[in-house]
Amino acid sequence: MNPRDLTDLAFRNLRESVLRNVLTTLGVAVGVASFVAIISIGVGLQQLASRRLSESGLFDTILVTPKTNFRGMDRPNPEPESGKPPRPLDEDARKEFEKLPNVVEVYPQIRFFTEVRFNNKPFATVVAGMPDSSKNSGAFDGMQGRFFSSTTADEAILQIEFAKELSEQPSSLLGQDLILRYAERQALPSSTTSTDTSRNSAEAPTGGFSIVPRELHLKIVGIVETEPAAGYGGYGNGRLLMPLGAASALRAAQVNDLRDIVRDSASNKTTYSSLSVRAKSPSQVQAIEDSIKKMGFRAFSLLDASKSLRIFFTVFDLLVGIFGSLALAVATLGIVNTLVMAILERRREIGVLKALGASDADVQQLFFVEAGVMGFLGGILGVGFGWVLSRAMTFGTNFYLYRQNLNPIELTAVPWWLALAALVIAVLVSLAAGLYPASRAAKLNPVDALRYE
Image (tube, rainbow, N blue to C red; front, side, top):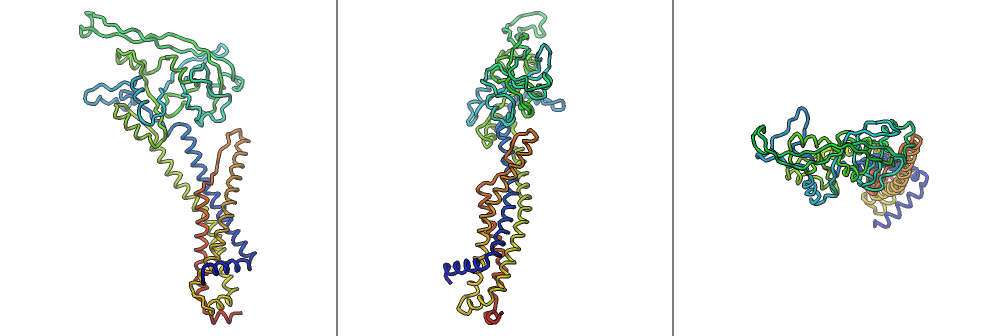
């Protein structure tokens, strides 16, 4: 029996029992739709987490600190290697980092504790400088107001908890001014003096800086719910955010300034407690991190956390896939039942086919084609139903989040590979379901089949 005759005969048989075959096909469609909808939740959550973390700059950012940095009460500073003093993390080092391949930007971590005056009342807070690239961070999604107009604007974005300290109605702060009081570092010229009371009776370099109190008027342009300056790379939560360029121009005294004085540093170069180095993509972080370590600095990234996250979502997708397959198992039983009933109804037909010269393989192929057609059509319908169901779940979730005054999210996602995989699985499951009925039909004795009434 040639393939065309086999196909025509299979479709004719499917048309004769339309209602039963349609219900079986719909059973497959429901199973595939459930499978697609459940898997789409895992895929959507994974994409959401990856997108938010990527936008936050965690996985493409390397935190660089000098080897002389204080490492904690229980972790003493290591001795310099080979007797050489450790390299300072200064402007020269920053320029070297910028020249590394695949580096997008290098910016310092500027944070300092200071006082803010609003309505003639003092408020203690931590100021953090934010680079212009941070506006793409998910931390600023849904913020009240707007982002900074430029990198050097005298503007401020307040963290919501700090805004509530300033006013009972935080939204009323937008457009108002506040006064930032800070300590400006002014370098003193280096000089050499000779004194008999010197410990080594030799010329000793003197230098340092003076602290000058300053004030700066900032316009409040935004209020953010989260704390973008907290966590990775931070030395405290930034409750008042300002453009990094403006924060750098303040030359505000920070913790590392006191560290330099204690070390009797004679250099007037600006040093940094830490620098953030952003790569073009997370895949290039490791190479940049290794290059920075070879320069004599410490470098940290969150690649290990990224790997753990991928493992978590792989296991999660596996579990939801198992639960989604239960619906396909029910659809498989429906196909088996339909084809077994078809054998009982078509015993005489099978006997005639064998009497006319059809082989066992031809009969098996006939039932395989019927099962495959039901699986293919059910798979197409199931993918469509699954996509509609996934969008409905996203819509329902966002409606609930809207009622709770929260930002909408993309809860589900149906990528092309999921649709293709669901269709292939539907066909394979249907063929597997038709294996027993096809084998049973092929084993029928043509004489007994022709006698069947």
